[in-house]
Length: 85
Length: 240
Image 1 (cartoon, rainbow over the protein chains, first blue to last red):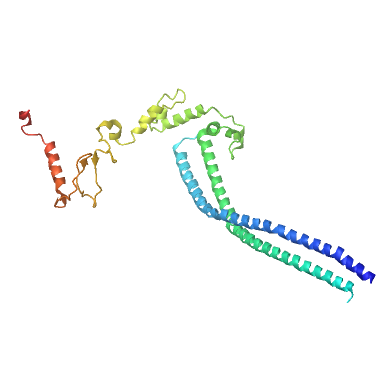
Image 2 (cartoon, one colour):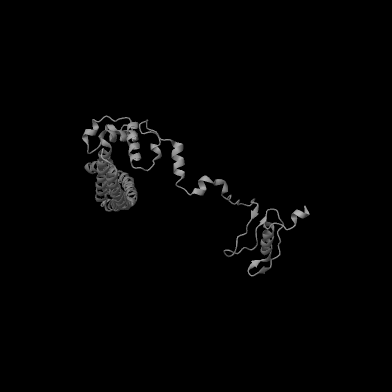
């Protein structure tokens, strides 16, 4: 009978607090991850939206190519017109 | 049932309740994390998809720009010479001569001359082209010179003659606005006015005007009056 009471006391005074402590730690860790994950989602969406302008790189590519072509034509004409140093 | 057994059952129940509460809360938190990570993954996938062609495009742009740099550097060095080319670059971008040209390593050791010497060479080049360049107005033997006023007058000759030498003969621009001496009304159809313009302050008739052949009669009267005003009055000298 005494051992049963000792077992109850251990159960109530040791096991229950330990279980509660451990479970609460797990819950706090999980809750602390939530805002971080949400911030990552917001940042990823914002980064994806920022990259919408990458389509303009195709225009830039064409413009650069045309500019270099014009510069090459102009340089060829200057090469003919001007004497070498 | 002994009291010790009851207490044990209560203790076990407490443990089970604690387990349920905290585990359910943890499950809810993990579900929120999963949802947020799904959104993050969608965003990251978007970033990957949108940035996929960037490498090729930027490489192409850099290739073209490299070709342009090679072309311009080569042309500049070929036509101006290494020393003057370095001087020109130094004149345009102070301090850039130290870096030298990319395709001409020896340019780093070339001492940049004063920019005036490069301009003198440019002046001679323009004069040699026979374009009557204003920049070559002074003797090419003199210092580098650009006469701003002469250059400005020379540029004006590129525009129509009437605007340059006889500005006083040009009719003045009409005065517009609510205070203008001549008031116009917007016409309903192009070329036809409701009435001819009247001077500011003149009495306006509110009655609708009669028309003759699509033209307001008062307008015809105005035209006749204008015509008679322009014609020399017969016998006016006699009256005076």
